[in-house]
Length: 296
Image (cartoon, rainbow, N blue to C red):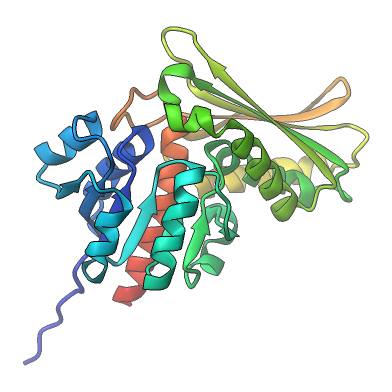
């Protein structure tokens, strides 16, 4: 009598031991489909490295070089560093053929927003996870575009707690804006768009909030938009449980606005840091989908 054995978990490496990388590590550890076999950075004393070591996860301070040295034992690489570093890291990983899931705003290849195009991404070697604001807001912008007869101008404003925005993210503000705007154009077909990022120093930290707005000059079917937004919210919540629409589509003055909040699971930072969860959960969804397909 034959016995069926499930394939082992997908062996993943995480490069970048800051806020995003460490939050991602904790989510990978909770996944039955994934196993972190390398957590690599450059600072031996970083809190992320210390946490990984305390959990028995193999660590390295050789960064991407550690990935290259162990490539044959790795199935997928997450990059949670900076746009500049990720560009260099991709040049190292590309020849290995390993899937590269980029959580920085480097945008060197295909955009992936799981709620919109997950199935189209599973055969791509390089995936850009856009930005935290992009993951939160672009799906709702897509709903607006579908409910309209072509949108000329769309605006996204994302606000996150200052404590949750690390130095690499702060160094990438220009890249953040450009990449979010490009993803909005690509997924929504808008002619013009603007992205604003607010880093709020309030204590205690504010929950991540995103506002998506167009002018009422756009011909939008509000009933169709509300139905579409409700479906999109449910789809995103399937992989980001703390995602919620707090202001459904509403026309006030000369604008139609949707407001969403993202509350985190509190894995690494307090629950207000939904800006971490929205992108780490999206990256996790990609890796788990690859793992599931390998098992089928």
